[in-house]
Length: 189
Image 1 (cartoon, rainbow, N blue to C red):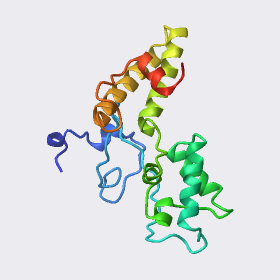
Image 2: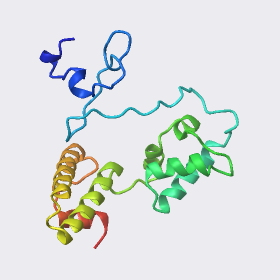
Image 3: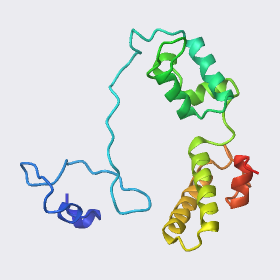
């Protein structure tokens, strides 16, 4: 692969001279990873989940009990990712559920939609709105904090992209991002 035509930098520009190299002299795997949105750095890789087609035999909870627990946790105000963590850690009837989609054949969000318990906003958008409100409040108290001013600008940019993506389906057609609209959407008034 030609680095100059692909827009990628050679590994000598990415890593220090002390970076270990493999037998071929390159400084990492041959995979090209996606870059992050507001930086030149690459994303860090996490470990992969083990490949499984069916739930483990020790996790033999009924699908209806799992779905009931998912709806119950949603009504308590937990987000879909928090529900997955609680089911993994606490389980249903004392039995942990390592993967809801393997146990039920549906994702947590699909279960919530079927039972009309889905959140008002998508979870990723809600998290970004909460972060933007928190940063804006911080900037009101600390107007000279230019690093967090930049972080707020980046967060607002991500929010606008997500709103365009969700517009019409999960967000109203006429919704536009502003601090006041974010506070109202989050119910922080």
